[in-house]
Length: 132
Image (tube, rainbow, N blue to C red):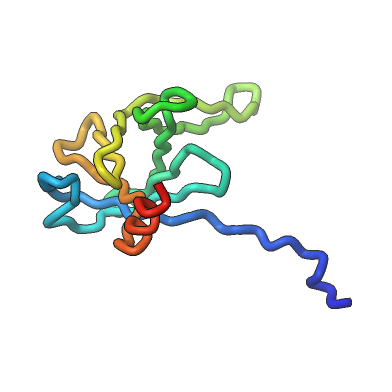
């Protein structure tokens, strides 16, 4: 028996592109450029977002309700309390809504929308719609 036979492979996070651009009439993102990445752990519903212009910050995009198409964009501040307890403070900093194969993310302080590309590969999108 091989020692790796009992090892269950852990899937890494899925990685998605974060882009800015223009949404076309057929809900296709056109004239876009990638501005960051989003990660999603298998089984999770909350995305972790990293924008390249803020390399040391991360943001979280989570559904508003169990079966909602609307998302809340959050930032997390971690700090030590005076008695050395680790504390967290979540702040709402925007929202997200489904648009075609994307989630349109609106940061409160950014004038441009950022699109989370759920199916960045056209083949994946075709497979998704063929299965539906």
